[in-house]
Image (cartoon, rainbow, N blue to C red; front, side, top):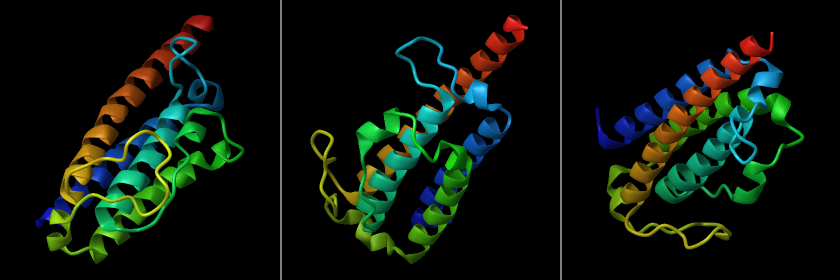
Length: 158
């Protein structure tokens, strides 16, 4: 397995795992927060979609995606289609990494659209893709824990 296939494989695996977790939750559990300022499952998913598209696809694979990071932390009108958007991300990752050349990973990391949340990442495209895989993996753990706690809270509430 080559470098681009490895990145795509790991990102698709993380997203598939997230799909499985979200499918097990009802609407109430998806919006349950462990603490008032914590993230619910829908927020975690919105954030991973935005972050992966921005870092791995836009910077890593040079596909303009745009991002509104602040919106990822607010309920959205399309949250009922959030699972579909997450599943579509798997396909986006597959297509993006299928067309990119491994040699491009050595190029400098440069956002293609306006970067509106702090300083853009630095290093190479490879560095940013690795950050994206790490970021999504961390949030998979957060999603699993939040889902477990949401199910326990629902069971305790009767």
